[in-house]
Length: 191
Image 1 (cartoon, rainbow, N blue to C red):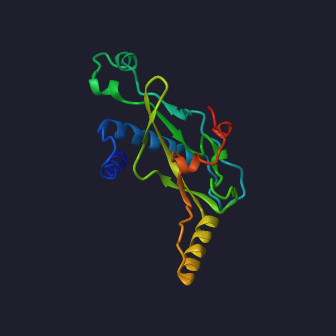
Image 2: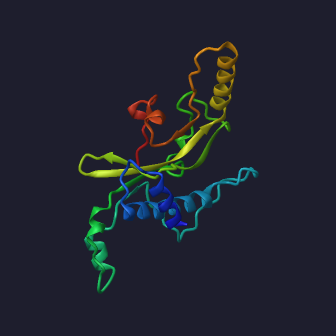
Image 3: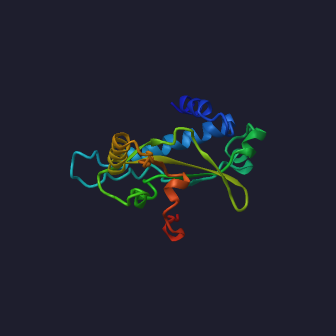
């Protein structure tokens, strides 16, 4: 599953960095976070409390830093030191497991059941210019059914009146500027 996701991202990124080892590393992290999310989210049908994560499962993130030379050298008597490992970039995961307050449509502000999470960003991580070094970020797609209905209505009205149709966004990646555009800097979650 990890290799397939990395390959799909590679194919979907014609104009972005395609460092295969970075994509595989990020894909492993995505699998880990997906596991945490599934293990702690109620199934939606029951009114039971959120299930607790087993004590033997570590909670890592939302910022993942690649292993350093020290980590690699100390975990193996004959470490397989590969120079490309030094070029892996840290990853910040923008996910409701870490930041549940993100479940709000950036356009209409709705927070009820009409807002839902729909999979990881289809093109993989985004490059981010960090203060000290280059970093990456990945997030989920948030969909707003209320904005989707408004977009469908606007399309019908424009077609009937032969006016210009202006698309109303209803799907946002949590790493996109559209998602963060209407928020204040103090709304940005911190670890």
